[in-house]
Length: 80
Image (cartoon, one colour):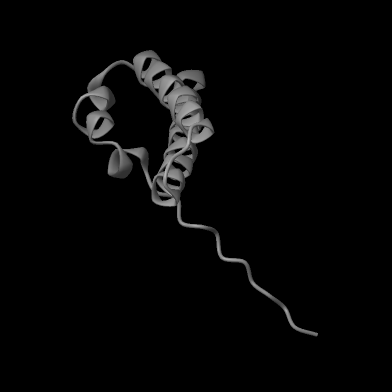
């Protein structure tokens, strides 16, 4: 039989998708960065419920995933 290897999807860091995070938010304390990511996820999910072009929809979904990954990374820093 055939074996299909699943390559992990390449995760785009939030800093590559969000210039504000890259330039400013990333320099704030960890708890502020987490709060920003949570607000970013909430606002992106809200925007997805509105009518938006498919291009924007893909971007918003990527933004949500990147923000969630950033929260996971930042949370591990605070628990170490």
